[in-house]
Amino acid sequence: MTQKRLGSWYEELPVGTVTEHAITRTLTEADNVFFTTMTMNPQPLHLDADFASRTEFGRPLVNSLLTLSTVVGLTVPELTLGTTVANLGFGSIEFPRPVFAGDTVRAVTEVTAARLSKSRPDAGIVEFRHDGYNQRGELVCRAVRSALMLRDPERAGAAG
Image 1 (spheres, one colour):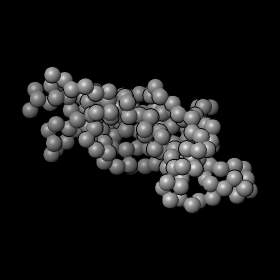
Image 2 (tube, rainbow, N blue to C red; image 1 turned 90 degrees about the vertical axis):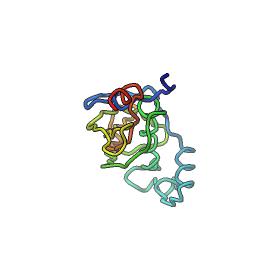
Image 3 (cartoon, one colour; image 1 turned 180 degrees about the horizontal axis):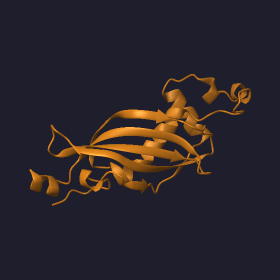
């Protein structure tokens, strides 16, 4: 019997697979203040409208780690929900444009590498490139990460 899941098995993520994720998220000022203070970041560029008004941006920026977390989070239903063992790490993270309160973020993912695990016959390692875009289609975040993904029990058992 196949277990219930939304995410994708390792076998469903060949190199070159592109997923345009269904869920989008508008980031609010409250999201930004809560995330920034919850993570103990006192940077006034995220929290102080008067300070931010005197910068080149003219208003507070959304915390880049909130942007990253949102972009990766938007990918979970189609990719990793119920099918990942662990996030193994990030190879690179870029923020080419700022995000402001009121911006709506969407994500597109490409599988850039995949290989079976040498130590875990029930899993494989997949490298994802997650691109986050704002409502104007501008790239605001690019993150490359590796995840240990479960193999389809029916296929892994047959190969074992």
